[in-house]
Image 1 (cartoon, rainbow, N blue to C red):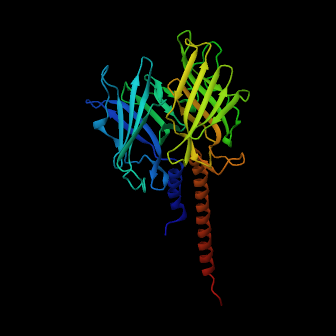
Image 2 (cartoon, rainbow, N blue to C red):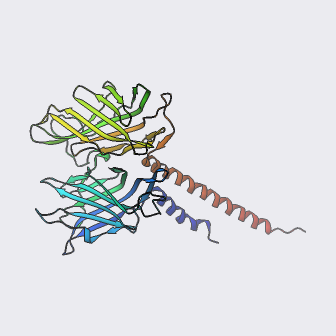
Image 3 (cartoon, rainbow, N blue to C red):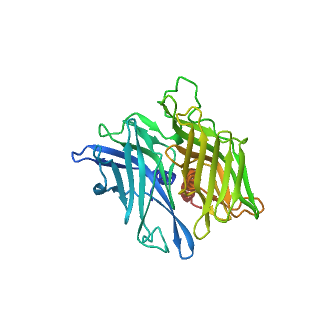
Length: 408
């Protein structure tokens, strides 16, 4: 039997595996073998699909066997086509990142995901069969010749699919076949350490976290929306001096909140002096799930070249839970709306359509909070295992010491 100390590496490997999914490196090369795209990240996929008895959820990770599909990947051609990274795994699964650039920045303009509803490993009792696909724009972007870096979780919502990227390092249009040492950090991580503050005073890129506010929308049949959350607007626009800036604006408790209750849409409206924000919650076809399906913003920016900004996205699938239950997430969520506007949501608990006695129902926690719990659970499990090993070793040693004494 192995000594107790020999088991410790096994426990540490178990701890590492539970704490975080494995990252993988993906590289696209041109015909000369020169790398033009490099990406290193881990990813999980949360999918909702229909069965004969209602909707079902499926969650799975990007496996270590995933690899670049060279036939569908490309370095692109100047003024003809843009770079594409296509990752293939399993039986018919594809994750595709389409890049584009301008004079100063590059971005993942579109993300495409194809999945196989015939795969019973992930989609048990699915009503539909075959390959299905979804796609969405993203806010993954970085300065030219810099690496996009994001330690925080990045969520991309695609109708019934949410992809969560972790510990992401991505760069396209590579100049020397390797990641640049200079980085552009994602908004979730905060401003880049190399960002030089502007000489004139301006609102910080990431101000202090907004205040948690309670919202209640009531209709003829009672409360249809109950929410507790802190909201922050991220707005990108061109100033009068032709400088592009991104401002983070907190929703204040002093802003006016109202709303409306309809059969299949519940609306929360928050108005301030210069902005109107609408959050519209819908439900799926079987009326078993609610989710944030549309975000709309009208805002006046006094220092902008065009002061009036309107942004809207009607195909979201965020803040989702079973009707009658509440969605809860302590981790900050970043909801991409358009390239000019995204919404940060902090410490959210929300319930739409069916609210009993003006109280939240049973809680359905977000994936990010579940992942954060893995580390303390794994540490606790490892410590318990270690204590058990020490106890067994002690009992064996004690038994042997007693065996050395014989009765006369």
